[in-house]
Length: 564
Image 1: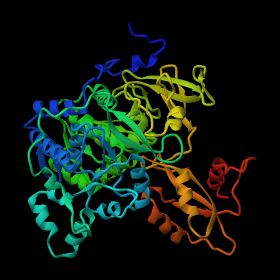
Image 2 (image 1 turned 90 degrees about the horizontal axis):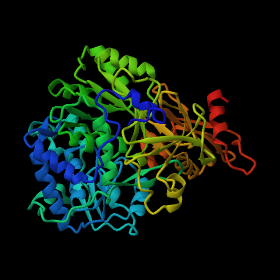
Image 3 (image 1 turned 180 degrees about the horizontal axis):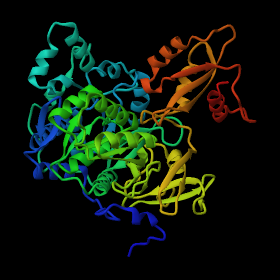
Image 4 (image 1 turned 30 degrees about the horizontal axis):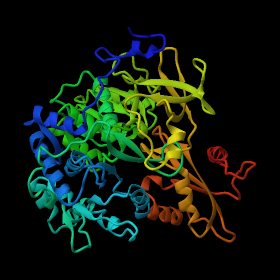
């Protein structure tokens, strides 16, 4: 019997969406094997026109798994993946899991300092690395010892014609080649093709269990320095099953998913690496989002399902209008990772005729926990209602044991099969975030309407969400403070017209120093990924502080908004 009193949102579920999903006891390895068996001849991956069938994908996974076994990977080992979106990324992900090992995803555009912190934390001995990032990882100091680095050349997966074009001795070809590949300086490089050049992994080789760790996904969580969120096979497979249940209009084996979100991000990983593969979809991969690349691919392989972030929808809708390009094949679009402006929804749906709905999640929830129904009951401007098999509570942020009255703002708690197991080697932060009875503290302040729809109104945490990525203010502040002219810094997020935020910094300079914004941004860019670099830097005589001397970021933010 359905309890509409305690779970009023069930009445808003779209037709065909179950209230609960089946318990997911099998692993992601079982899931990809099922898809290989069921959709063997169908195209699994498309990369600049080159196609890989599910049968070919299964063969490559088995060969890569055997190659990893040969270089010493065993169950429980962490294997770092430092790759953009490409076919090798998909193969590597499932090959690592097939051995019972643990995937650790990394942004390949991170600086050496950013990557080093994560490698120090997870202790991986084997890394599968984009050749453009190879030298960065290879330059780690001796205290980070890797037994094997495997270099991946993205051009090897391009169609023959494109590979030939990249070799042409003309400036345009050289520029295009430099953007996608680079030759590592090391003379002894173990290449990806060598990993696959051999036998398939024996079917008798031991398999992981659903409760085994599948992934360490680094996130700033609700506070501070990035931490490794522990996600099991059951966590990730449950979230894929929840996503599948949420969109009953999808046809297994017939859909075209566009992988414009990075697979190393929890959002892109679940929607593309697991959800898409679970229904035998064709996953069209893009190393980075580019309007021209997406529209070019759409001419031959029209997308039917597009997970993305608001700026991508706005750019595509605008380009389609100007070029009179037909995007009506995209029946379903799900936005996440940042706030979705109602104006963007209206623009997108006017141009495409398809539905665009907003969801809510965090890495610690694999990542999706709530979503707007894909149908007439959706409510733009809200983040929707809980996914199947997901519960929510709204509590006092100072004491999560105290529930808020109906309609009153409070911190959102989430519980369900997708909720993570804790932070890697960080029991203190685990205890602060994951309550003993399985409730996940999100750090977001929300209100819940009578019909169960959730609206995010504020954040307990001070993370900045820009372009769908989390930025820790503390990390950016530490980088600024390392500059010889900066004696104090405060980093905050300011509202951006895209619906997300932009990173802004207030700095106090040493006596006699003058603010050179361009130089300071260049300094940050050398030590931080591009999306973390402050877009705005202002100089203050002093920073507002609390009675105990802590910088009050809220007051800094207010001052910047007021133009002071």
